[in-house]
Length: 378
Image: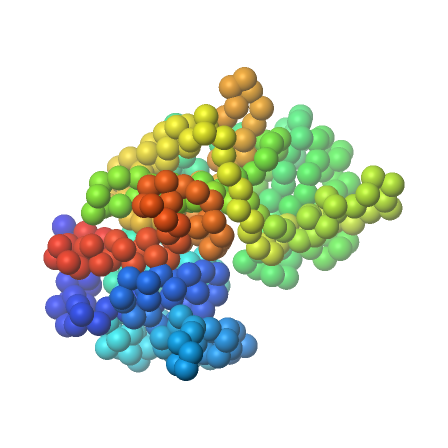
């Protein structure tokens, strides 16, 4: 059944002038690049202190032709995106919204997901109702979807007193509300010692620790499986794989062994700093597709129409035999890594590297030309 907001927007849109729209952070440049690569326009919503990347450094200009951002809409804060006059401007621009994690984070600081879904009048590429499943305190969240799909994820512990193995504690950061603070421990006593260090360092609060998630720590390399489900083709694609660079974890890992003792008291920070491309052994590809396909089915059953377009299963590959994926996080929108195009998987399928932003634009163009835009928008 077609979403009435999508039908209302498409009734007024000039389909020859569609514009992919995203907030200026996270993966917006990939959206802009992808739109231009497929003959669509793009519009990036910027906020104070975050505008020059899009309005200056990567803005389109001529002689010689360069840049990828067609236009920007500047706001005081990203939260202003829900204002009626801003929504009217986006509708006038024939905008199709591509949600990224920054959109969720900055708007959810002020608004509930119900408000976000209701007040965004422009069509989303993808399923807007699935975005909230990334939040661990939402009902029907990502763990419910993984459980429904029969996908392995880390065992959880209800309280520190239950800890009997190496675990990761994930708590809200004390000052950066949209970030999490992490620490490892292997016993209740070790938990208490680490927790006190984190409180003393100002990274967590007692209230944040009380609501923290305690998960078994899966040992192995991390890999993000960046998928794309195409309603137009009825197929699941693996666009690429990557892994994270994180502060100050990567710095600690690079310390020479002789300095490890000197750094033992430094709390580990795992803030996102970037991504690097990584690859899988071919023997793992079928297992990757298998869990991706199960997730697509589970999401469709839980919240029709389910996944549309990009999503990522963030995994640890644990030792075997046989080696296996353990999914520790799920992204239900465009991933944050443009580097996925530099792994070979999209080229194996499409004959050349295709970024996630371009693959979104491809799907929009296919849907537009087949008069099926309502099948990829909500």
